[in-house]
Image 1 (tube, rainbow, N blue to C red):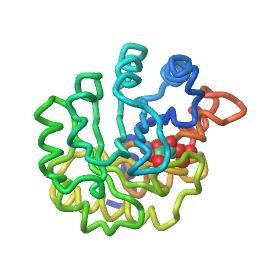
Image 2: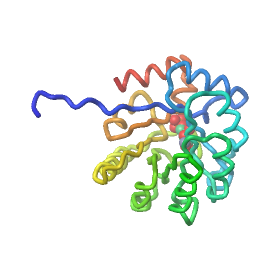
Image 3: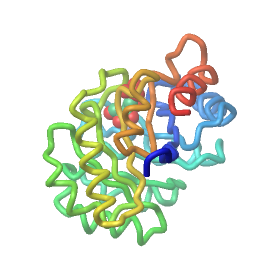
Image 4: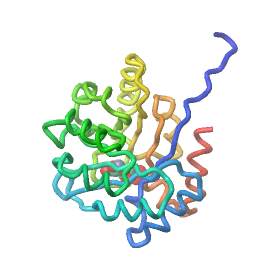
Length: 227
Ligand code: DX5
Ligand code: ZN
């Protein structure tokens, strides 16, 4: 209607501790929590699905005791189906799997839900959305990767905005209320565009933990661009 403004979609911030000091993770999540972060994004890498190694279930369990924020666990691992019980027991709130990582995506999402954890599904930026869309109805979170998985501090791939918008359209057409998360290269300069394309959760690693002004100022900068 002319003269009416559609209120902006609420958008959560999920700092990724991948860019934090791994010897001070409790401080890193505490700083994000005090600065008003909504979730903590935990990038699990197994040295196989992606080259690097990061955290395992023990770290997730320790983080669960260290923060009241939901733990958004991004599994960049082969055969995530073999690890669901361990991450569920550790206290993960969301467990997101890659469509490329297991032959049974639907079964793995169902197994995550059966353990009382919110299932998430994602795909590499080079993988066609056709591989993702059949699974969005079974997920509580759909993650659009805006960099190649495996490394913090990469540049946002510009074509990601179209992919976010396409997933937003697919969710809306099917009246699905899953979170639409974007991960990779999010900075104050592009956060609003990602939100406006339809995202409801933005992951930010280097923009939060490598900002020379500190975590609190970094989160405030991102919030301001979303206001
Ligand atoms: C990349 C990870 C991201 C990473 C994002 O494989 O999935 O979560 O931490 O880092 P930035 O925000 O620095 O691109
Ligand atoms: Zn991630």
